[in-house]
View 1 (cartoon, helix red, strand yellow):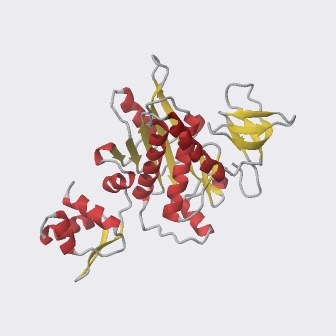
View 2 (cartoon, one colour):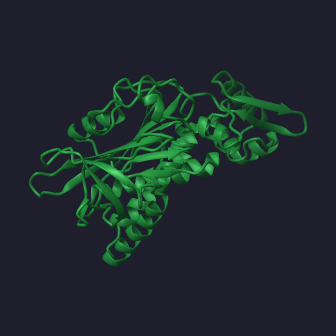
View 3 (tube, helix red, strand yellow):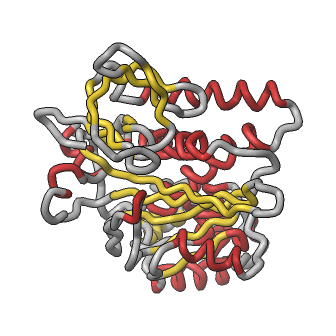
Length: 348
């Protein structure tokens, strides 16, 4: 790690607070002149750093770009587990390409400033413009069989927790993979698996997440549904500083929480402990769901005749199945498909 990276790490932990040049020099075991030189280099990189005599240095704002060191620190990963792009077609696609080529990517994070071909479920386009949001993929290789919907649910809870911690705006979930705050969708999740055809197991799970941070002008019907963290904060009268770049920290927080969930589910030799961990996560997922006791339109999408039907949402089980009641009073559990809810505020 370079002196610049170490200074970023120390000042980011104390953002908006001064750290003396002497303290930085002692902690990094370099001269005061080396500290001054590194600070000047950071300013050239886009960091706004205030220097005050007898007080030291503090970061006023971070550059509007992803920072591998901040990502690593927040995610609890090493820098070599993080791959950052200025632009790419899709972080999920890049992860899959590398796995197919034979790369070992357990707990590897791919993040991009912009995606040219971001996508969601059913190959729908996910708008991923530069400087407006965060777009990233975590690769996780479980040791046991997985339930994809549970992994998606854990990602949803992780996004909600991270957004609330950083931006203080409450989040809710629409089964199974959409995150809402301020009445609009701010994030989507696409979970994909790499299967081992010999064993029938899943060798790697690829979890792609896109979060709209800054306000964006969406086209057509999307404008009624899609929102951003910035808009939600404005609606809820929560302070939001668009110049205070927290994108790296947001990604890192989500990934840190998600890995903790997955490790508790799939890296334990104690089956009972794993089941309890899943149940606890699903309790929070259910608490955040706004579909319970709501009437929805169900689109089976695949595996049926494809007819849309109405149902009442009764519950979400510990396998992330949506339990619905049909018009005749019977119940069924959905593990795939889509549901839509219409209200005066939004259509989702």
